[in-house]
Amino acid sequence: MILRERESWIRSKISVIASATMTYHTLGETIRFRGECLPITQFLNLSERLKKAKNTIDIEKYYHHFYKNEALLTLPSRVSHYARKMNLHPKEIRFKKMRRRWGSCSSEGIVTLNTMMMQLSYEHIDYIIVHELAHLRHMNHSRDFHALVRSILENERELRKELKRTQMMH
Image 1 (cartoon, helix red, strand yellow):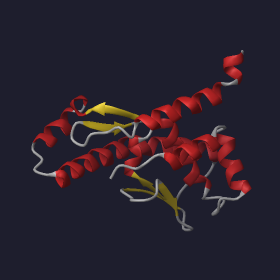
Image 2 (cartoon, helix red, strand yellow; image 1 turned 30 degrees about the vertical axis):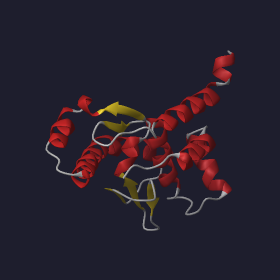
Image 3 (cartoon, helix red, strand yellow; image 1 turned 45 degrees about the vertical axis):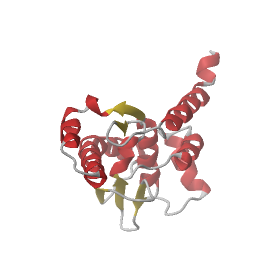
Image 4 (cartoon, one colour; image 1 turned 120 degrees about the vertical axis):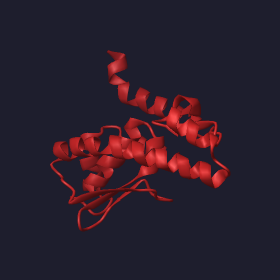
């Protein structure tokens, strides 16, 4: 009973620990993927490509290609799930590498998601998706906006704080 009452808090603390471990990453040896720092050898195609890399720029290009492919495979179904749940449907969904943002939503109803978000846990990925979809109703960060996000993800505040502390690997 006590665990159920504190489940949200426990999950947020686990997530903080996971995001803190994300800072320990060695280019070409490990990869941040779905909230974990994993050995590159677990991803055969990427591992093989990295062996052919001539410099850091090549390595980063291969990482980005990997994240983009994973985003295209993973994110559309998650966006669709939350769009149905929230009854908010974007006009278009775009995927691209962004330097400073995890996502954006235009006043025309176009949601753009940063392919680098594949570094994050599913919990944080879902938060970004819900956050951007909420902008289809509220093009601001008002109380109503946060209430809408919180109606879908109870631990919205903790997730938002954790994302602010999470550094994006480029």
